[in-house]
Length: 305
Ligand code: 0X9
Ligand code: ZN
Ligand code: ZN
Image 1 (cartoon, rainbow, N blue to C red):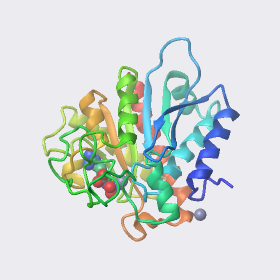
Image 2: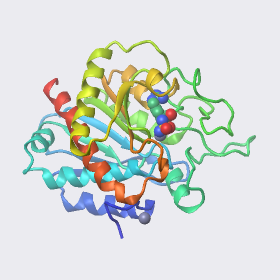
Image 3: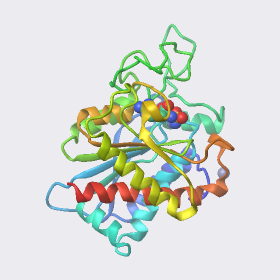
C-alpha cells in the first residue's frame, strides 16, 4: 500500500496517481503525455482551481534520475500538501486560484522501476539500440542545450551518456514537447534531484552567467533561507557550472533557453552520508523543508507574473 513516508514502487505510484486524481476533480486532473521506452504511460498531474480564462503555470518534475528516490517522494508529498492545504493555507489557496502547477511524479519510470527490481544504483533510461549492448542514456544530458559539449559522454556505456541525438530518449521528447506546446503558459520550471543540498539555476553548459543571474540568485538564496528555517538544513545556491560541475544537455538550461526564466534544479538531502540511500525516516523532514523552498519560488513567480 502507498505511503507518503515510504519509497513507493512504480506500481504503487501509478495507482496513487489514479486514486488521487479522481478523489478531487475540482483541484486536480491528469493527462498522459506519452509513453516511456518500455511502454509505461507518463501521466502528468495538473493542480489548480478551474478557471474560464487561461492560467499561467509552473511545471515541476521528479525522478529524472532513477536512483534518486527522495525526488519522486517529494512530488507525491507536494501533491498531497497542495490538496490538503488548499482553502486553509492562504498562500497555497492563492497559488492554485491564480496558477496551475503541473507535476510529473516520475519522469524516468522505466529506470525507477529497474532500481526497485534489479539495480538500486541505476541512473539512466532503459532504452536500447542495435550496435551497443549498453542500456540507456542520461535523461539530464539529452536535452538540446549545448548538447554533449561538456560534462557528458558520447559513450553508450557511460552513466552520463548524452544519447544518440538531443531528445533521443522518448521520455525527454515527451516532456520537451509538452513544455513547447505550453510555452506561453509556463512561467517556471522546477526539477527535483538528489543529493547534495543545492539549489541550482542556469547555466550548466557554460560558465557564462545567465541574463537573469542576479534575480535567479536572489530567489535561490531566499528559497534556501526559507528551507533552512525549519530544521537548519543548509543549501548552497548558484549557477550549475560553478556550483556543482559543468554539464550540458540538462533540462534546466533547456527550459531557460526556451524562455522559461524561472528555472531551478533542486538537489535534495543529504550531503553524502547516505547519498541516494536516504533513509525513509528522512522523507518527511526533507519534504516538509523542501515545500517551503518550492512555495517561496512559487510566491515569487506569482508576484512577478
Ligand atoms: O548531473 C546532474 O544531472 C545533476 N546532478 S545529479 O547528481 N542529480 O545527477 C545536476 C544537474 C544540474 N543542471 C545541469 N547540469 N543542467
Ligand atoms: Zn520502503
Ligand atoms: Zn539527478
